Image (cartoon, rainbow, N blue to C red):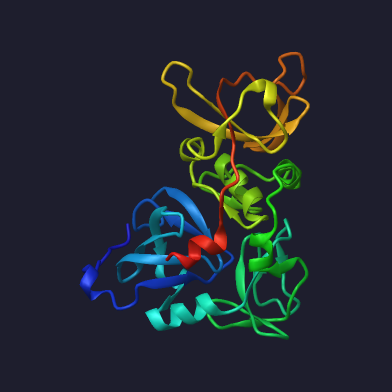
Amino acid sequence: MAAVLLCSAAAVAQERALVRLSVVSMRGRASHASEQVSQALMGTPVRVLEKGAEWSRVQTPDGYEGYIINHSMTFLTNEEFERWKSAEKVMVVAPYEQHDADGVTDLVCGNVLVNRGDSLELPDGRRILRPGGVENLNSVCDRPFRAERLPEFAALYNGVPYLWGGLSSKGTDCSGLVRMAYMAQGRVLSRDAKDQALEGENVDAESLRAGDLIFFGNARTGRITHVGIYAGGGEYVHSSQMVRRNSLNPESPLYLPLTVLAMRRVEGQKLNDLVEKM
């Protein structure tokens, strides 16, 4: 296990950082051997809670906490962070992993970069030519939310392997898949299924429509352990072993014997609004 030297809050000169790689692990403790509790995407601004020699404990805009190894982030002074906030930014909305023309970096949906006119700037200052599948961040966030697009987008990941804590096309868990579908519309949900189930409004089976979230779990304890996106016709898209489509109908060959605990209609928060509050 890596040794960790944590500075006191008063000693942390740089209070913000940006994730500099397409996808980075967030760990439960400051060690590669520790559980991956989530991931963070390029351009995600984080609040540095404790800065160590190798790892830092950080908080994402939605309040999720974990440890990220320092070399995966670019640390900013308050002044640098304010300049980044005011810069024109773009977000990758293409569902599939891609590389820029010069092979500088890979990119996944949800990555945020600064628009520099004829090029895009990564959080660590590297420049790339503008690839396809990117749009102005504010434009994405300000569009009307369309719930019916959620299962359509999630289904594009069919076959992507399940990865605990995963949040990208490289591998995703169930709540991560939901987050990815929302992120493509510039919206952010809580990280974990149990917390996602507290957002939005409750719906019943008769009013269920495409884009609603279905939460599964233990009927005896009421503990939520899984989430899928309703796709219509009794079917839903979720990540279980891999991203796939299953059915709520016991007569369907796609049926899985999972216990439904809740169904919610959720719009989420705009990403740019969350960043502005940091």
